[in-house]
Image (cartoon, rainbow, N blue to C red; front, side, top):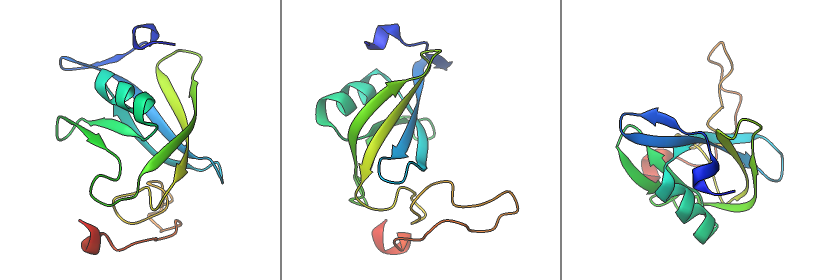
Length: 123
């Protein structure tokens, strides 16, 4: 599939697709972000995860500061063609808070994830 084939979400002038990253080893969802055309293209070309930051309004490579990159092993498109699932080999924590996944809390706020690094030493 090509970028033109996806159903994109409008965020201001940006056209974005939901990008879900799954740990290829344990199948857990590691993180969720958005991709614009550039992030999608760079991900496919490099085999490493790139995103569009909606808060910083810029393209960014996962791990550019922490070194915790995500190596893409498989890409799937959902039935509505508005989300991509990337099965990735994780080289460290997925979350900028230092956890193995961004989904490290339950609904009560209890930490249920595994802390892999101290973000104060990385960022």
